Length: 276
Image (cartoon, rainbow, N blue to C red; front, side, top):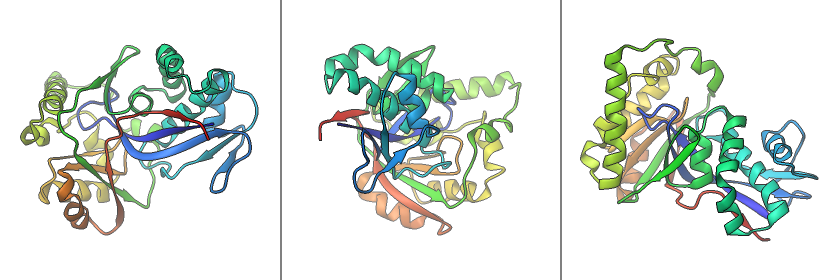
């Protein structure tokens, strides 16, 4: 038995710590000895820490193509995997038991991660809005491609948060509140023409991009190449760009060559327990 968990992109521009999106790049976390291509997770691995926190017993293995320290939710993904693996150890692949336990699973994942946006998306799938311990999937009326520009350097989420302002002008608060509301409505209504405006931000991106100039260039290049929207994925340095599926290859080719690209979609399933 294993748990398959999607990577994530958090914030989506203005939705700092409140919006997350699950992506079709998956980690696998399982019980027992590791299969080919997987690695045993020691007691210091975030997946094992999460597994033990949910009363999991025995050895754990992880297979994870999600790059660490790049803003694609590595830590949140494997933590959700560990928590779900412990739940599956007790309940098997009972979907009803998972649904009943979702509030507790989300609460534990949030406690371990420190914020809910990444883990809520990886747990539930789709685009998720979260606040106050609650998480709700945003209904999507279209299914875009997500082009991820991934550079070679890494970013520490904790370190990047130290660059953010402790006090925010009211005008900037209203700016982000308006864009966050507009973004959720646009995703639900399929109004792709407003996504560029809806993903603008004044709370966190400029401070983070100031320390990651290649990411700023990639974000600007994505918009110049016709992306519907582009944002710093999580704390970066990866940049996410949204576009039509048939335009993804051209968009990826237009991004700077000092990073590599991944053409993904939105994962709508979330964390899934699979029998093997």
